[in-house]
Length: 242
Image 1: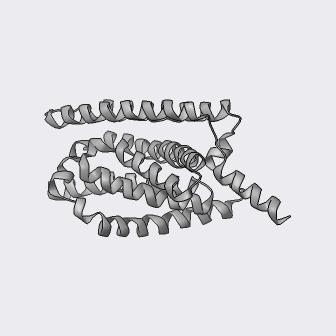
Image 2 (image 1 turned 90 degrees about the horizontal axis):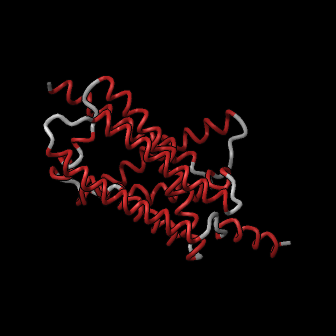
Image 3 (image 1 turned 135 degrees about the vertical axis):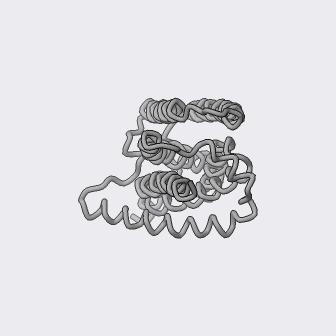
């Protein structure tokens, strides 16, 4: 019985959720998005009147297209959406529990990233992200929608998919989390080296959370809230200073 339980546990941890070729294709697509993102970011920083609405809309569409490609590849392999998301919610109590875990994680991870990512924090990296932040009411509404989209799609892509695939291919939980975190940081290279390092560190912490909870749902909540908070805080500061 113990042997069966162990085998079942290892199968759950190290079982692939998509074909390796599909993972290579998704990595290639992510690489292309990284190059495009860096190029567009350089152009955006040079613009006087940046169309953030169009930028947010393009990003939202791209996130959901990548989400669809990941889920399609998992489906072709015989994996369900639940396999990617992890343990489902069966009651309101479980929803509230994960929301509480997400809140505690957000506070703790923010402190950790602030401490260990301090060397990557600079005025230059702050200026590298200023063009992203919402300036008006309508942009703020789209920012919130973008943040929710990022919370759902990026957690599915990087923690639900890449992390699980990397664990399966390397037969190692730590390496799977590390590789997923590196990919997550690289995907945000358009925010500058400092931003990519901090986001990669955040991705590692989100990976640990997903592996512990056997679900990406708490990470989705924390991820979305963190992005929303960044936009709201930037908006409040701008209004106060202005």
